[in-house]
Length: 186
Image (cartoon, rainbow, N blue to C red):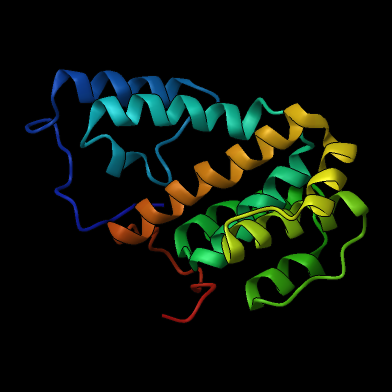
């Protein structure tokens, strides 16, 4: 799907060697494509290089089950109303086993009826961070019991990283185009 944004499009004529190095690294990594924020970030190759490596960890390297990571990403996309982030991750979340009813409730801004305590906890942590910028003590203890301290650190990292992604996509009007309807009203 062709991406567009408000940034100057890169071409053979205006891509620097450093930008090309980062683009090649992203395309040869686990993602295999430049979907999402990467064509924005590459305007600052150093930022793109660091952010894509953090993103690869947050998406593929945490101890969290992929279903839970994708739940955190969709919670973030819905909170930021990030069209492209939702469009990219909604099919991944479904494939990872997140229930259709949960996905639709998140899109609508409703609290889903979750299937597991881990899903409930992941969502509650994201809502707490976005609404109050803190995690209440009882919710924190529940998260540590479910995911361990390292898992909690990684979960907060996923929320932080995907907030950066959502802000980037929204700020630079990244659009995936195509016939897929936008998940959120503008």
